[in-house]
Length: 171
Image (cartoon, rainbow, N blue to C red; front, side, top):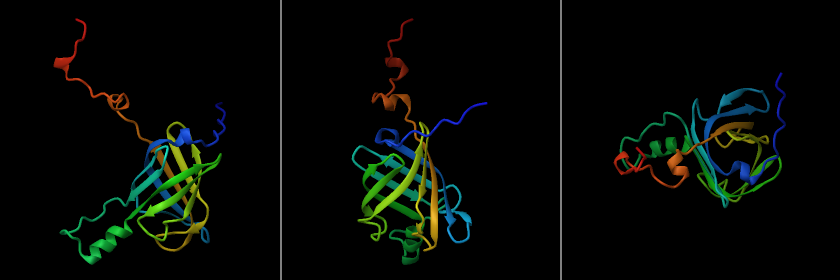
């Protein structure tokens, strides 16, 4: 029988890189009801560099505006189907604190967003403290899971693959 491996303490080195969202669920504090925060299969990315964190999350199947510029109704729908912010961050053994300096919603700029985390080589999971949901105002806990994005080998080495006709492979 395999034993559970204890979670590693969170560190900056463990979270550096690009992560793709696989799920985002809210749990209503009052009722316990669980629901997808932005519908099923939201599109989301979080990127940690040594200097800052950047979030971008979009609802799946967002409606494309009929024209540019979008109508007022289309602008509202676009705003209501996204979530984005960026800022510096600090890492503690069980959490990361995002110090938001720009946001899709100015009410978040200047705030600190605490994310309790578990991380391994391939998966990053956030659990928030109970707070007001920015989308509907309910008191909820957010549970978000990401997988580490992998770059193709040639991008990791910073050298593009060479076309076959330029390779000097031994016969």
